[in-house]
Image (cartoon, rainbow, N blue to C red):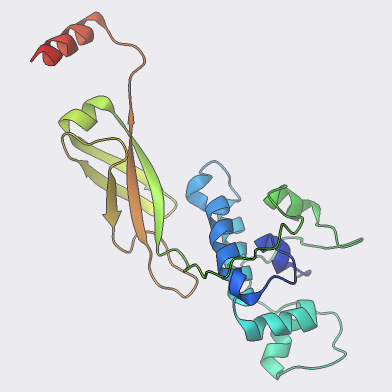
Length: 223
């Protein structure tokens, strides 16, 4: 498999300080999380690639081997480093087998790579200088749209997410923006730790009403 530039995947320059890798990942994950792009068939592949890049660059030892040996860094890790090793791929088992990531020419991205990530900061981006460390998110957010009648009277709905389908109960009087936490249902962090799934209720207000509905609402307003 051809070389994948993890720095371009993360949207950062190669000289980004180690302390800023996690911050860059957190910002990038908000851009590419599958829940934010339900109509993009490549959303999961993007997010998987981002997690792979983060796993390598966030580990100083792995990052050092990656910087030194490029596409052969995994072999260097396995054999404790080597010199003059040419060609070859990164070994089996990669979730990206079958994709072409040829970084030909003057270091430009392949057509697939460009199509996958578009123009969302792949030019390297500005170097982050903040010294504050940000923890990897421990929860994932998804939105559930409900009509005003369900919000007022309560009910049930089936919410489909990239993590599965969930049956939710809507309490009477649910306000726009109300959140419900589903423990351990929001996927996993890069270390395999489960994330919570936060459901945010969006209440859709009808744009038109029948005369009967208007009458009922007027009666309800007058009490």
